[in-house]
Each structure stands twice: as C-alpha cells, then as structure tokens.
Length: 80
Image (cartoon, rainbow, N blue to C red):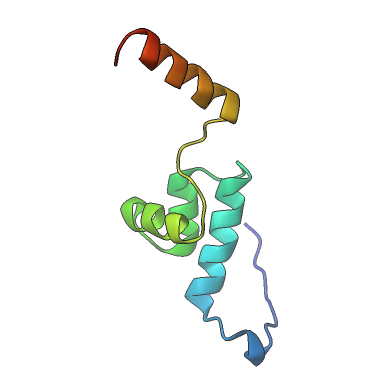
C-alpha cells in the first residue's frame, strides 16, 4: 500500500476526512474502488459512504444512459 502526503493550502479549508472522502469518491466514480473499498479508504461505513457520495454528486448506481433507457422501456412494455 502507498502512503501519500499532501500539502493542502490553508485557503482551501478542507480537513483530512474531507480530503480522504474526496479521493475515495473520485476513485469509486472512476471504477477504481468498490463501494466497500471507498468506504474503508474514507474511514466510513458503507451506508455513510453512500450518503456522502450523494453529496459529492456521485451515483451509487452504475447505469449507463443506454442501460437506463432500456430498463425504462422494458418496465413500460411489461407495465411495471
């Protein structure tokens, strides 16, 4: 495992936990970490991580627009 040291200017006003969550959410969003791995990295439970991901604008549902359109069409077709 790598250890990373960051020099963050005081003007950014972010604490260590926020920085870890920002990194974890980006890695999750890019598919480099699972939800559980992102939660571990941020020091959160999976549930808490899901909530924070939402505040970062990251969806926990990995649907492409085409997959979502197909699922909606199927739901309409089968009257679901």
